[in-house]
Every structure is written in C-alpha cells, then in structure tokens.
Amino acid sequence: ATGYRVRPDSGKHVEMLLKDQKSDEAARAGWDAYQRGDVATARTSLTIAAASPSSEPWVHYALGMADYAMREYRDAAGEWEKVRQAAPEFEPVYFDLVDSYLQLKEHDQASRVLRTARERWPRDPEVFNAFGVVQTNRGALDDAVKAFQDGVAVAPNESTSYFNLGRALEMRYYRSRRYVQQLRSWVSNEHDRTNAIENYRKYLEFGGPFSKDAQEGLTRLAWVPKN
Image (tube, rainbow, N blue to C red):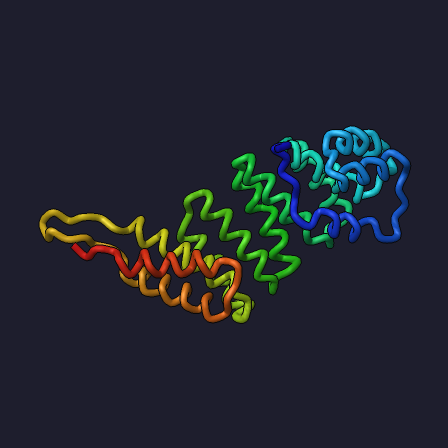
C-alpha cells in the first residue's frame, strides 16, 4: 500500500479548471503522473510548473492534490489558497481547503473559509454540512447542531443534513447525561434524544450511504438506560 490520501473527484475538479486554459509540458506531465497514481513524480513536475509566474490556477490545484496525497497538508493548503484567490467562484477548492485545515487542526481557518463560502453559496447545504463537521471536530456541538439545522432548512429534500443533525444531537445528548446520586438515576436532555431519533428516521426515509449508521444510531438511542 502506498499510504497516499488521494482526494475524491480530483480529476473532475482539475478538468473544470483546465477548461480553456493552456498547459506547459511540466504541468501536463505532472497531471498525467497523478492520474496514473505516481504521486511523487506528479508533485515534482507540478512544483516546477507552479513556480512559473504565468502558471494557471489548475496547476496549483493539481499540485495541492499531490501535496495532500503525500500528507503535506500545509503545502496543499498553500496551493489551494492561491486557487481560491485566483478563481474564487471555484467551489470545490473551499471544501479541499477545509479538509486540509482539519488535518492541520486549524479549525478557525477552516471556519473562515466556510464563512466565505456561505456568503457565495447561501443555499448550498454542503457548505452548512461542512461547517457542522468543523464544529463537531472542535467539540462545539451547539454550533454543529445549528449548522446542520441550517442545512436542513435550505435543502429539506437533501438527506445528508438529516443524518448529520441526528448524529450531532446524539453526541450532545450523551454529553449531557450524568448520574445524580440523590435521585439514583441518569439525568439528560431528552429533547436531544427524541430529535436525534426523528432525524435518523427522516434520513432513512430518504435513504443513502449512511443508512446502516442511522439504524445503529436508532438502536443505541432505544437502549439508553434510564437508571
């Protein structure tokens, strides 16, 4: 195993940027190497191409992909920030940046990127879901719940937000649980529990790749001891 972390849909995203743009020999050789899985060679060639003052945004994007695949997250973020500056309308790079900042545990940077994305695409549930994931990673479950609720509000027919909201509510529910000795029972936020169940069920109505996880969440919440 190579241990590389290749980004999903990288080829499609590069082609989006490459449209109507020229490429030099080093850039094309680097991208060809990346596509055949030779990430190290790709990074070398793309680094040469990106050093040119006239290098196109797609070159920096592809170099960021190679950097990320080799776990050079700081370098990847640097290249993708160049892409965001040169092509701010290119939405995929915002999510790539968020992933690189999460790998670096720079949650504030990830949040700033998503706030900018939210201004540009205020009706895109993927932006709200990504923001919720960032908040979950930093342990800010109240903010995560709010972000996923916003995702549901802007796209009520998109299933992923329901699953994410159910998961965040479940996590917040377990965080609230505590045993009160005087009462000899567990005390928790039952509102979060019932809402988590409701959102897991809603996700299952739509169906999707997380159906098994949603069902497991329902099972966990059904078996929570009351005392």
